[in-house]
Length: 164
Image (cartoon, rainbow, N blue to C red; front, side, top):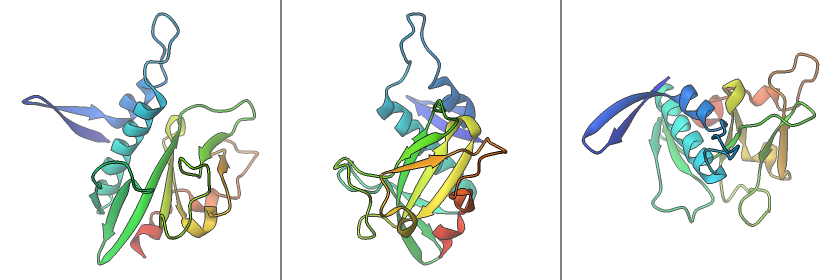
């Protein structure tokens, strides 16, 4: 999937997968090239590209004070969407997704409608209705495993939750 990037007066096409893969590379000193905030911003850009490619309208609220990152339109339905991402696999083979805001509390139905999780190394998206994650602070996903299956696999690529 390509994403148009504007830099000054130039427009460049960037492969989203390549952009996100570069986020986990290290510089010569062994330091991470991007901060967690920058990785999150890149995942949000990938979300916009993915959602638009699926026919959704996407709007970004001004600032970052709201508990949601985007408003997504499908027909007459508007959904408040929070985007999260995982970039590294854990020792146990799982990817951890934070299902909470800055206050460390799980998201509530009055804050968001849908939590979208992007597992970058696997290029896999999960779309959770808030009721599925409302009591959880962390989601453990293992999309690449054939032996271990997460109870969350039914939410893999479940874009229908945005359609209503």
